[in-house]
Length: 125
Image: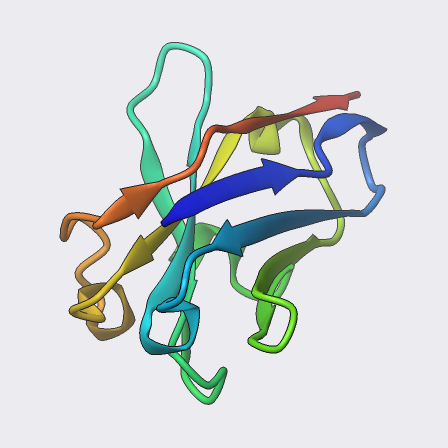
């Protein structure tokens, strides 16, 4: 399984952005998918997760109401729509996959089974 994130870039504060993550492999529909981010000088943190069919989502408190995670199993894609960006959202964003679904139960620190490379989001004030 390989994950490829894309969609990052330079955005002005208040703007929106959609990140995408493409998965290659045969087990996509059975995996919970998540997004994480790592800001400069900080540890990587959980952002959002979605279950195998998109029926259950979970968000970090810091992004609730501004971030929306979705998936398209037919295309093997996961998306993170971000609204009302602020400079505090500047980070490298990573997509990841998990068999256990622990992220959906509030265990954002439970380990991923697969990680993608990051995509950089920079928000200017």
